[in-house]
Structures are given as structure tokens and as C-alpha cells.
Image (tube, rainbow, N blue to C red):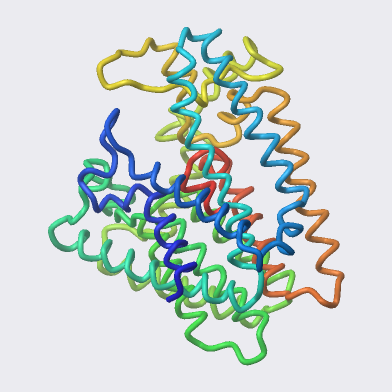
Length: 394
């Protein structure tokens, strides 16, 4: 594994807070391993751009997505002032909290690392190896003593009568799985191992039991197969999922897959379970949005301190879990909504253009399209646009 791919793994390791493996990875007010990730991203970027051999590649970075990101980072800087005006937080605390958005520097860096199909394959192979390690660690912790250091990783809730598996970095696992599934669908001599690896990542995602992630996964996979008219593969996968689900139900109290979809539907229609909490969050976010409609409230950069108790209003202003789009609107207001709409529109217009170009590597282009579609769906409750680990995949 070359240095560039080792750098990739280290950045993900830091962005995902050591996958809960280091007891000192996140000590509030003292040390955060994610800060090392920020340093690796920007040092790596400067090193690549400073080398004479890479001078011609700077033009690759000068694209509309880079400008979207620059605008967003500029906007984050203003959030520091808004947090001061609206919630009496000092400027220094706001700047400290806003540093996590510097993970957006991973976009130009990854663009340099994956500038060719060969380098992209190597990067994805690195993430696939990392995914296998993460799955093995999850299995060990599920059936044996937990090796994770964080309380939230050790004590997982039960859903559908089954304890949720603490698959650290499950987004990376599924990300790598999608890559090999796209290769399987688009390469004439694709290895059977590609589809098997994808099914393994699907299994890991299901046992993690994050419902929106699973819904987005199935919708995106269905879209992939329909668009590419791979109906035989669709039928085969449906048979595999149904038979595997039936087999699992023989050894468990409930059918894990059907229970996840049924519970999601019941929670949404009857406003119970996690949906009840999300409805309350939506109401709170909407009230905050009405107070600061145009440029947002500055909640993204509110910094919680170990020895300082937040008021309820300040806590709700900065709360950012479970509702991706709604929280983004709360943080950035109408300006943020327009940014999001234009960003998504720009992506699909660009994708449509390059798919018509005969020189395009269809595996890379289609993977980008399908993965972004997955993110757009999952962002309803997940948060790829503001969390460090989400930004890395985005």
C-alpha cells in the first residue's frame, strides 16, 4: 500500500474518531483525534500542490464543486458571529467548534488521490480492506467482549427483538460495497467476489439496523438495477434477500428485515418511537428557523463545554442528529436551502453531461451518481453535509 493510500486510511481513522478503538480519541477540552485528520488533509493537500509534478493538476481542483465548498466554508465563518449574537457564545469557542468543517478540504485532496481509474481502484481496495477489518471487529464485539472504548458503542439498543450491532464506520463499509457492486454491473469480466463483497456490506448494514440507511440502500440498489436493466440480477438479489431473511427469522424472534421496514412505517404513520422524537425536533427547528430565517442561527458552531451547563434553547439550537435537511436549514436559513438545492442540481447536471461523453469511465461516473443519490435520500435523517465522517464520504 502506497503512502497516498495509507494517508487515506489515516484520515478516515481520525474522522471516525478511531472507530471507538482508542480510549483517548475524544477527550473533551483536551484532545480530539479528528483534529489530526484535519492536519493530515490540509498538509496532504499542500504537499500535493507544492510538488512541481502536480502543478498541471491544479486545474482539476478549480471546478464548480470547489467553489460551492469555498462558499459554504465562508458561510460557516459567519456562523461564528451569529452564535455570538444569538447565544452569547464567545468568538474563540465558535472558531474552535467550526474547525470540524475543515474536513471539506478532503474534496480537493481526494480529487488528487483518485485522479485516474487506477488510483481510484487502489483507494477503493484500501477502503475495502478497512471495511473487512471493521466488520470483523464488529463481529468480535457482538458475540464476545466489546473492544470498543466509547460507552455509546458498547451499549447498543435493541430493535426488532435483536441487539443492534455496533458496526463502527458502517458508512465506509457500504461505500466500498457500492463501488464493487457498480463494478460488477458495469465490467464485462467482473469477479463474482465483487457481488459477494457487496452482499457482505449489505448484511453489515442491516445488522447495524439504522433504518434510513437501509431504506436508502435498497432504493438506490433498486434504481441501479432498473436504470441498467439488470433484471436477472434484481431477481437474484430479491431471492437472496428473501431466503436469507426467512432463514434468519427461524433463529430469531422476529424477521429483522421486514421488522425494520414495518417499524419505520408504523413510527412514521402513528408518530411513535423515534418518529415521535423527530417530530418534536422538527417543531423546535422550525421555531428556530422562523426566528433566524435568512442566514441561520449559528447553531452549527455552538460548542458544548464539559463544565458549562447549556440552556435548553442553546442546546436545541446546536443539536444536529437525526434530521439532516431540517438541521441544515436551521443552521443556514434560506441561504443554506438555496445552496443545497443548487449543489444537488449542479451535481446531476454535471453527471448527465459526463455520462454522454464517450471518454467517460462509466464505473467512476455511475458510482458517483448512485452514491450521491444514496446520500441525498439518507440525508433525511442522517447528516453527511455537517458531520466529519459524513463529509469524508460526500
